[in-house]
Length: 302
Image (cartoon, rainbow, N blue to C red; front, side):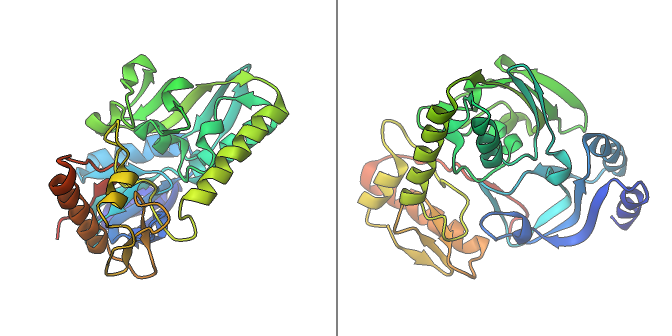
């Protein structure tokens, strides 16, 4: 691992850290160390870095801004590639926008709405990156990424980069083909519509205010923990099961929104997993529903 770190540093490809705690890179503020942490400073640096990573034979995975992610206390084996500030470019070509996978989805919605482009209003308050939003087909308020994505540049598990069309992404509710293949969105081309700026900004504000008023963003969290087992809603099922406010260690089922687990200050991944297990068991017992996690759980097993 030290040799690989030296190779990446020698090429000045970006930030390279050994045994970097991933709690510094997740919105839950939870996660053990990555053997090697690589934050490329450009797409070209990512491509070049991948040649060294593939040649080394060590496992790797990519993350965005760390929302919708629970990293184990034991950390992650191999290389963690963070698509962050070095992959946050934004270019416009008519009504098409090419956006880096590391670009904040909230910032993007704000910037383009101010310019009078409609299509991202649903994403107000979603605390992740464009790449992560594509990976999860993030959505709210009746819309999602599948409605605006034209194509995505994907980093494949073998280290190659490939463009996927919207159809090839096989989007469905909070899912894309990337969750099956392990691919990561490095760049996305989005198609938006020009509209009335004031109307668009008002819708964005309404959605942002709704999130602030109904979701516990005053504590570290990862967003919704469970997928909605439609036509039911996960938060309502959890609340009706009497679990709202329940704690395990430093993790708590939010008393504001039951489909959120918050870090009250010193939570471990094991605490969150304990609550997830409790919720699954209780909802199966009371409602006979097998509820599925939306948060991605990764890392070494204890």
